[in-house]
Amino acid sequence: MTTRVGPTTDPRSRVDGLGWVSRAVFPDDRVGLTVGGALPAGHQAVARYAVVPSVARARFLVPLGSSRAGAASLLAYNALRPPKVRALRAVLGGLARFGQVGLAPFPTLTVSVPAGASAAELLLTERLAADLGGAPLLAACGVRPPDPNAKPTLQLFTADGHPRGYAKIGWNDATRALVTAEAAALRALRAVTGVPDHPTPPGLLTETAWAGQVVAVIEPLPPGVRGVPVDDPPRIAALLAVARRGAPAGTPRPLAGSTFLTRLAGLADRAAAAEPAGARAVAAVSALGRRHGDTRVEFGHWHGDWVPWNLGWHAGQLVAWDWEHSGPDVPVGFDLAHDAFQRALVLRGESADAAASAVDGHLGRHGDRLGLDAAQRRLVADAYLVEMWLRTWRLADAGAGWNAALHPALLDVIEKRHSG
Image 1 (cartoon, one colour):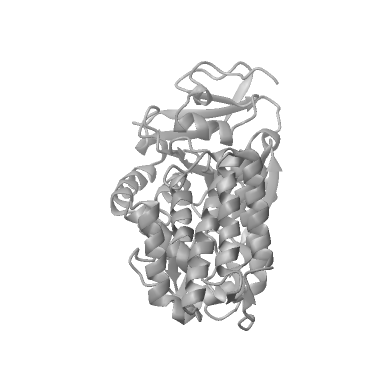
Image 2 (cartoon, one colour):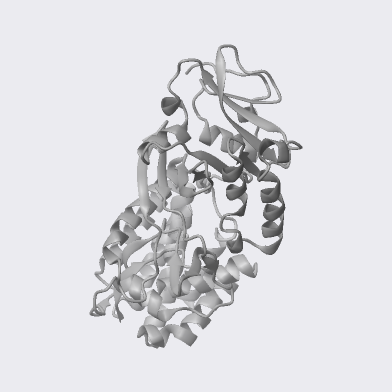
């Protein structure tokens, strides 16, 4: 390992969000990062960013190489953001139209490389520009508190402010797995173009391994996309289209002996070998098989994170993004269950127990439109909750840490349901 260049103004030494993002985007020690200091000896500047609103409270890194790209990084897709964030970005976007002069009140982060060094070798933005055809690109990046389950994302723009893509960076085991899974899902979804009622996914532009990271560049959303209201009713036709991918309804099969139940059992065994609470997951999967083994249900694909904030409308067509938890061979109805669970847990701040009850209510109100009878609805709800705890463990085991809202509370909920 070489010694990192640059003075103490290098933000990569920080323990906050700016430090975390800087280390992910500029991992090579030969790259110099300075805020308000002199460049390292023998270096030349290759990019500059406005740190908004300050180094201590950084929220955005806005590129200063093009006023159009800087403004676009703050204004693009603003309709999808909460009102307060939208208003702030509108103001900053107006300032960015004046380039470095407009953003002068904010600190400047300067990126430099040794004279004569290959920028494409040292800088992710340069590498991605080469992969995407060679036209120069500028990158913007949101800054948030360090989160082992989150992926720093570069918004890529051409100099004239045209959005080119979103580069998601998998930087630890958990996020590398998520980025890889989304790339695989988007490749597979190319085959479902034109399927009636299927939501439009963004395309996968490129996927690459770089500096120990996994990076997937996702196609920009349509410029006029609008968010789905958080209280919108479920779109059953779209859920069925995702589950079946243009195929006819599948023949219901018993839960016992299914590859789905076998997969859960395998994950639970792995959890038990790595984590004391995993033994409870093994028991939960066994109880699921005893309780619902004879129930027949249709199996299919699911989006994996079907929630209003991952959905939008454009030109009368539903658009869905963030497919990183997508997968095949789950009971049809999982996306409906997830929608209810996350609305309760995230939007309303309810407990895991209350969120599980919301799943029961949602399936009770809408499950018949998916062809689910009472026994199948109970299977879907119970199986989904086990699936969710195993997802929680899998992310924690990969370095993301436990979701305190789901562990151990969700195991308690599962055990209560199986004993009732």
